[in-house]
Amino acid sequence: METSAAAARLPSLDIVRGVAVLGILLLNILSFALPEAAYVNPRAYGGWHGPDLAAWAVNFVLFDGKMRGLFSFLFGASMLLVIERAEATGQSAAQVHYRRMAWLLVFGLVHLWLVWKGDILAHYALIGMIAYAMRHQPLSGLLVLGTMLAALGLFTFANLPFDVSQMLCCHPDPARLHDYNLSFGLPAPRDIAADLALYRGGYGAILADRLHDNSASPLSLVGFYGPETLAYMLFGMAALRSGMLRGEWSRARYVRWLLVCWGIGLPAFAALAWWQWATGFGLMTMAAAVPLEALARPAMIAGWICLILLLARPGGTLTTRLAAAGRMAFTNYLATSLVCTALFYGYGLGWYGHLSRWQLYPVVFAVWALILLWSKPWLARFGYGPLEWAWRSLARWQIQPLRINASASQ
Image 1 (cartoon, rainbow, N blue to C red):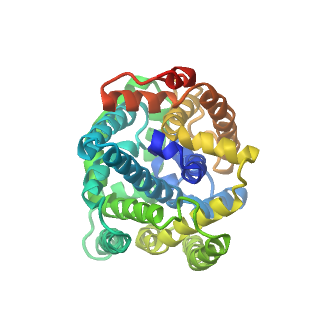
Image 2 (image 1 turned 90 degrees about the horizontal axis):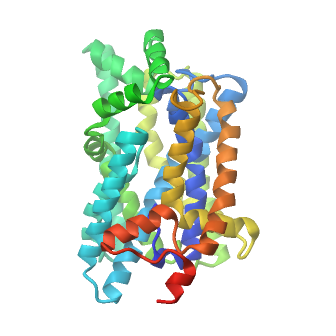
Image 3 (image 1 turned 135 degrees about the vertical axis):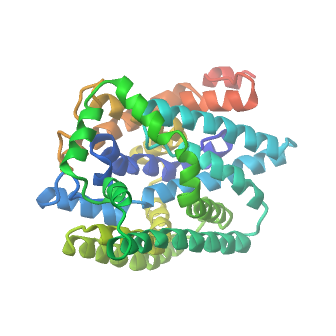
């Protein structure tokens, strides 16, 4: 999600990032608008027949986990660009990097605790602090380390269905079963009613609940998702070094990689979607799907990069607007949270829980339109997005020029 002066001069990276910042809302909208379990399990809330089932299936096969993974790839690539630029200009790469990560952590915690429980910035900041140690690895080293970390993440995810199976068959634990159902199973009607009452209520109650439940969530995310996120950041560094994310591959090579990657990933995710539907989205099936998704997800992410860069038309209207949205991904990501919480939570319009799954997507398309409409005109006048500018100024501990003419005069 990082944007910088160095990254902004790499159009391919901005275009891919622009698609990612739009695409991730296809999933995040579920967390803004529906009870937690509905994000994973369509039976939990929001509908699982007809158009609602189709909306879930398309999201599951094409976008769920892939947009988050794409962001992780891009974060690793952008982070490497910033480090290399600091080294090339004689700055302390460690100081530049860790100041950026420290302020990103602050932004992430403010977002998490005061705006929305689904923040990913704090997690990226913590993992980014670890990823710095791998910055000088050669391409092969990045791929090997990334694969090992992805395997570790897969092992971590595999503990989930194992724990659920043990609990269901041998060691009943009502409290843990209740927590699993709240997360990805079928919550009891009273739990759904309590969730709806909370998020249709005022800001004070939502804030108190968020602070109670998420005070240490960045650390818990590191334990569960950390190995996979770090793996994806290293894969992003490798994709940059190989020329893939720079747009330097031949068109034929991008096509070959797309066919291979999606030839693996699409059938795998389609089969998983069918299996979850055929088994009625039961708790054990949903738990078992977590490690199975992780196996095929990297291929889908690589395929997305290839597809985006194949379809991007240099100088095209949509391409330039996507690139602008990507340059302002930090601002657009946080602005999306402010807009969507204002639409869905009780202190705003109070739409929470009132729309079915498929009905959420006109809202998504409207937010996309706003992002695409405002990002390019802003960057025609200013060198950075508002929050990119704030982050850059804080990390350098010096107010940076914002207007393009002011920047050019210095």
